[in-house]
Amino acid sequence: MTNSSAATGNRAFHALMDRPYLILILTTLFWGGNVVAGKLAVGHIDAHSLMILRWTGALLLVLPFAIGPLKRDWPVIRAKWWLYLFYGAVGFATFNVLVYVAAYYTSGVNTSLEQVAVNIFVIILNFALFRTRVRGLQLLGVLVTILGVAIIATHGDLTRILTLEVNLGDLLVILACFAYAIYSIALRWRPPTHWTSFLAATCSGAILASLGYQATLGNGTANRDNLAAIDLQGWLIAAYTVIFPSVISQMLYVRGVELIGSNRASLFVNLIPLFGTVGSVIVLGEALQLFHIVAAILVAAGLVLAEYSARRGT
Image (cartoon, rainbow, N blue to C red):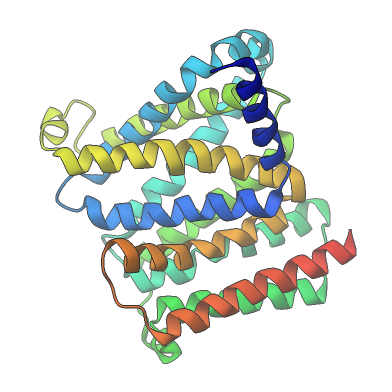
């Protein structure tokens, strides 16, 4: 690569990182792809192995680019090691393992509906801790977006909400959402380090937490049979989760929170069921229904409404 092409690529990267809406849409697009990857993973790679490979692979991918920044940022990382461990353990590993365990107890409908709690928890916690207020029009946008998610989750039949059974799995999903909300809010205290340093440090925390979860909730840390059972499709799925949901999405989400705050950035999480549905139609061949289109319009309208109100208030 020539110096001029490298400079052009650098400018393009920095231009992208200053566009909060674009980077948050890309973030949730790749996370939505993770929903499809999870469906494709069944029978090809077990979830605990996928979680450990995901964060280990992310660390190995970032590390070559992070060597220089890590040397410069090491005094900060060493002083704030506990914060990076917290980010990785709570924001990266805990959310995923709780949703994974919840899948054994609750339905996909419940899980999709309950993940809108991320934005709700962020709004509540920001108000409780920092007195961050939400405008009426912004709250209306949040509710419209949640309605769109509910339509996707119930396949257009909102009466299904009345027949949902609440159990341990639902509690675990709510706890997962609470964990990610805490992570989102805690990003306001992120030390001023290079993004590769941040990812390397937090992925290390996620690996340690994942190994702990594997030891306590999985089949133990030394179960080689799980790795031996992974086939080609399983490894390809692991590669996708490493590159896109783990490295790119986490990097972009952190930047999105920096640019517009956790209240507004976390609302984009509600796009995940929408992108997951689109991916299921394209990749898995699932049928596109009218309710999908209605839900997409509602989610988009809610986001626009909430952002319009938030921008007027800034």
